[in-house]
Image (tube, rainbow, N blue to C red; front, side, top):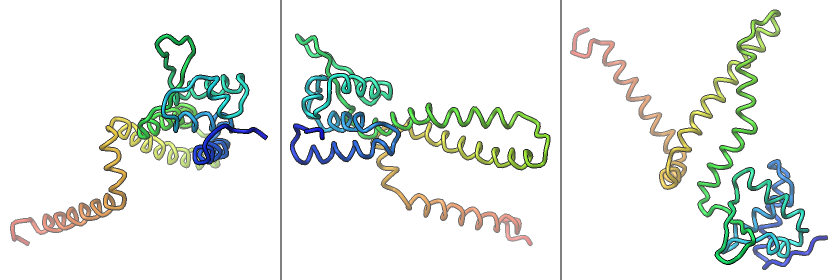
Length: 196
């Protein structure tokens, strides 16, 4: 069993991220390194990370490389120190944007490419005609979601937080808009000027 050199609350957070990491497609070590860097008050070097988490230098190096490939940690150089230090972004919205971008590149974009290729083919049997129609629905849905994510990526953190806090109020606003459109539509059917 690995012995961590962390205060209790920090250790609980780090352990939880390690457990969740496997559900998100990263290994436990990478999840724990990220969690440790996220809650650390200052950048940490590989030796400090290894000592705090009880990991070997090679495990820390591999974990940091993976986190850098996801752009979830950045490399920092300290004046007068030749060691490399690492830090997680402080803005949780920046982390959200990074994760959304990376997941899109790794998971969504290849699926969209496959669907586009499949939609260009001429199906030869009824089963493939049906399958292609379903693929078109999926393609349209994924494109709509990626367009929305592109819009979200352009928002600053404060605007994004405000949008998220609105929650169901957005739906109510859209319902009011639809009712107004219907009311205006009914008025125009009668000519809009009192004429039948």
